[in-house]
Length: 346
Image (cartoon, rainbow, N blue to C red; front, side):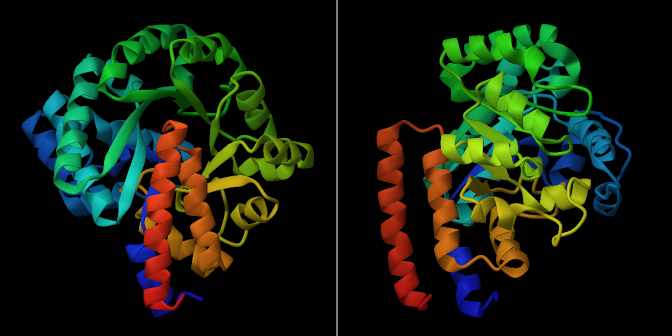
């Protein structure tokens, strides 16, 4: 039950978020202002029109809307604005650390300079850090539907952008018909140059997609991963390896990856002992925040305060921070959580 005390705890508790897309955090108003400034024609001309678009019947429809709207983001200063707004919003939710994905192919196809985009995002997050203390690192999330051949050039740019805070390489995009295995060599090279590895898998395709991510790509984290529930052997493997599974419940409902809250396997994945985290994915596109996701899993799955704290610890230790920084961050957060629980009696 979401009591007033538990709600207050969720609002005020220190948090970490690991599965979050920069472009998907852009507010409707910011989207419209950037489109106007950059002379980009959108399929909506006011906030109400944008919100009407943000209703999807299935995952591919979501991708179509997503790609149509992110065209408004063009220049380095645009990415800086998105990053600053996201950073300050996360800080207001007491997020201490976040890892945020940028989708390079959505911009490269429009001749946007990805190094300029990453530098702009880093500038925006640095400004948010100066004002609030939040720390944010970046990942490049390559759209798998564009194939492994194009990925090599994007990986070169990821390498060149590491000094701007790019710490990870990922594949996202359309899972259907685009399995992980063809990207194995690209991922091996990403690991060699010092990038951490993650992949969207098991969102709208079954366990075979997750197997491909953990076997062929050797990822450290799986984004979504909810279809793992369909393979007991895979569940056992993920638990034994303590592979981090970044679950985004509201996202799965909005895209149709899960048909209802009752059908969503988060509770089963957690109870089985998987190393689960909870995240917002694309806050604007799915009408949510990390705070709201924590509320919803209490309401729909009965997560307790102890379990919320465990999920938060999973996120700290599932991050790509160096081990010492993980320990330091968790000890700081743990002390704050203990004080907050005592104050609220939860």
